[in-house]
Image 1 (cartoon, rainbow, N blue to C red):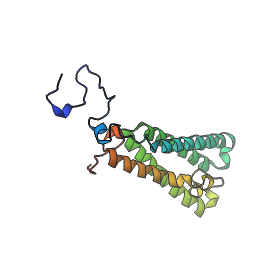
Image 2 (cartoon, one colour):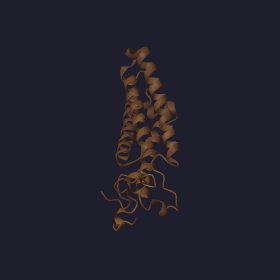
Image 3 (cartoon, rainbow, N blue to C red):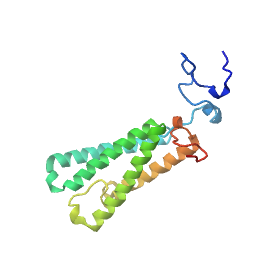
Image 4 (cartoon, one colour):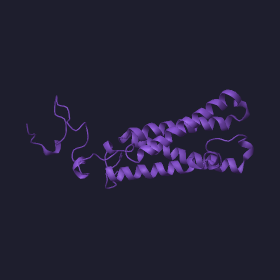
Length: 180
């Protein structure tokens, strides 16, 4: 049965399932038949994996530190726990894709970058305030500076997927033309 409204091409009609599994109409045609990967597809999978590893590492470290010696450096250990929470949120948001997840991922990466820059600067300027290192101390020196590089790569990846995909199904939170 043909739908007289071409704007609805690819949309499910009442009682019908979409044959394309919910992908936007026309996406496959522009990419040679394959749907364009979202924020968690293609190279984004590596980014999601690295965020997941950092969520696990920071969470385990913070958990042990808080459970065994919280009174030694409460600020540092609480910041490590906060960093772990940010990594978990970024991992999930990057992996899911979609408009809301895209916005959450941007916020998580921005918070992470701000945290690394602020905590990194404070830990170098006033080492007495940080008697033990956090994930973000000295800009992530204890983790090979990956905590400094990771949010920048994450934000660049999100920008790229927003421009290439342009829609929520591909991870973009705004149109490809840069509209609001």
